[in-house]
Length: 315
Length: 319
Image 1 (cartoon, rainbow over the protein chains, first blue to last red):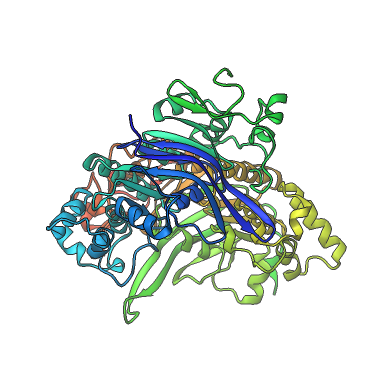
Image 2: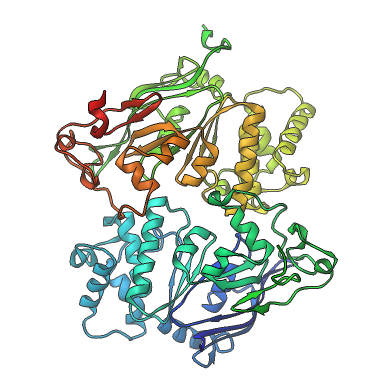
C-alpha cells in the first residue's frame, strides 16, 4: 500500500545555551491512509517534538533535518508559509488539555469550521454539515450547541467539539497530542468512543500521540514505540499486544496497573548525551556486549519493525 | 489546656468525619450554593490504606482539603485522634498539621521554583522547629532522600531541572519528613507515565509498610485503586455512594454508578445532569435500574454486609 505521509530520517535538535538536546534522532515512518497510528513512549522521548516538526510548529531555537513527504512535496524542505498552506488545508491538529484549547469568546460552531474556512475547502451547507457531524458524535441539540460559547458547555460537550474540530472539513490526517491527559475514566472512555465513531464516519487517517497505552490500545490500528528520540518498535496493534518484541515495549506494558505494575529499572536517559550503542541497554535486562558497542538498526521482521540486536529471537 | 496534644496510643480510629458538607457560592450574584461535598461520614483507622475514586468534579479534592482542615466545612465535623479540628484556631491547628500531610496532583507546581529541592524538603522541619541545628537538619533530609531513591546531587537543583518522577519523589519526601500519621495523596500519579507511576506507587506502598502511616489515596484509575488501597470509597456528586473492601467491591459492585465505572462495556457513556429536585437520588437521571422511590426519597448509606455500605434504594429494604 502507498503511504500518505512518509517521514524520512527526521532529526530535531533544540539548542539551549551550550547544550544540544536531541529530541528526535532519526525517525523513519510511513503513515498509511485510513489507519490510526498510535505513537507511545514515556514523556520526554520525543513524541511531541516529532509532531511539531511535521506540522512546522517548532520554536525558533530548533533545528530540523530530514524529509516529510506528503503528496509528493517535502513539507520540511519548503518555506514555512508555503508549508503552512498545505498543512492547514490537509492536516488538522487537536491539542491536549481540551478545556483550554477552545477560544472562550467564539461560538463553538465557528470554531469547528474555522480551519476549513481559512483554507476554503468548505461546501455550501456548512451549518448542516456541522450539526450533522455533531449529531453523529452524540450531541443531541446540535443546532443549539453550535450557537453556544465554550463556557456554556459541559466537559463532555467540549471534548466532542474538539474531536469535531479535528475531523471536520475533510482533513486528510488528524493529529492528536495526548488527547486523554488529565481526564478521568469516564471522559477518557468518551474520547475513545468518539474517536472510534469518527473513524467509522470518515476515511480520515489518525496520528495519535499518547503515553496512555490503554487508550492507544483501544483507538489505534498500528503501534509505534519511541524511546529516546528513536523508534524502537513498530507493529500492528494485535501483534504488539499479543507479543511485544522489544525489551522496552515489554517493560512498558508490564508497568501498566492491569499488567502487574512492574517499574522499569533506571531512569530515562538524557537526550543531550544518549547512551552508546543501543539506547536502552543501561536499563535492559537482556543487554549484552554488542548492545553497548554498536547501535542496532530498525529492521523489518514480517509485518513489523524492530530496533534490537536480538531480533525476535529472545524469550 | 493542651489536652489534645497528649499522645493517644491505643486509638484505633485516626480520622473521622461526621456529616461533612461544604458549599461554594456560585452564580452571578454568588447567591447559589453548590455542595461540593454533601454529607460525608467516614473513618480511617490507624495504618489503614483507603482509596477514594470518582470522576472529576465529584468533590474528591474538596473532601481531601476538609479532612486536612485546609478549608472550613459549612457543616459537619472532622476529628483527628478524637480532637475536633474543623473549628480549631491557626495556632492549635499548626500543632496538629505536623501529623497530617498532603501530596498534591501536579508535582511541577507544588514546589517553589526559586528554592532548591533541599530547602523545599527541609522547610517543614523549619516551620515546626523540630530541629535546632543545621547539621541534624541535613542528616534528616539526607536520610529521607535516600529512602525515596533520590540522589544527594538532586538536592542542590531547582524544580525545573528535575523530571516528573523525581519531583514527585521530592514532594513525597517533603510530606514524610515530619513522620506524619496521616497522608492525603490527591491523584499523585495522574500526570506521570505508566512506568514512572509504577515506580512511585511501588515506593509509596513500601514506605507505608516501613513507616506505618494511614493514607487516603485519591485516584480515578481502578487499576491503581486495586494496588494501593485495602478499602475503597466511591464518590459521586459529593457523596460516598459505596464503601467496602477494595477486592470485594471491584469484583461485585452493588451501586449502579460503581458498576458503570467497573464494567464499562455494559453501559453507555452518560453525562450526569444537575437535578433540581432536592429529594431524589443524585444518580436518578442516568441510573439504569431506577425505581419510583428513587425520585421521591434520597437514599441513605445502607449497610449491606459487614463493612459494606451502599447508598441505593435497591439495597434499602434489606435493612
